[in-house]
Length: 243
Image (cartoon, rainbow, N blue to C red; front, side):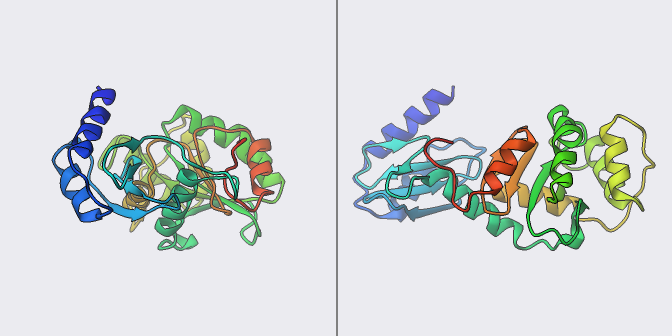
């Protein structure tokens, strides 16, 4: 099904020579993109004659002549970076910039110079694996962990209620850890930012959990061991061709 959706997009663009006009790309795509996707933005990319089209949950490249779409990675061989990963990092950083740390669950050294931001779901198996296997090693290495709650089932669900209870607990870290261990935690409600966490994740392109954002902008979806995260934190640039 996904193949046919992409094919439809390609055919639609082929039918129109957009002449480097983002408005025309928008008009043409609007009639063929899936109902669950909306065009968030269209901007020139670093590749001459190629536009970057943000569809929210997916980002594609559209050639200005309207004859081709590029779905997937595009690399800058001079700077040795992934243009798609670089864009995702900028998008996520912008989304996170509106949220102060007082509205996150913090583990590790509160004054740590290096940090990661983790979108997590209490009921996610790989989130639990990350929490119990990876996070302690990062904390031992002096890395600050900034947790944002991202219940995959959505708002007003059991997972959402658990996230709220963990955030509202007097000892947030203990409540979060107990909940991830499968223990019952006290159901508590308070003025909380969980819905804001969820929206920030959506705006930043989160599609699942865990979703890790390093302080140098690199976005790592899914579970990864501590060694890889520490290695990535040691690099100042974006994801390279060999990552």
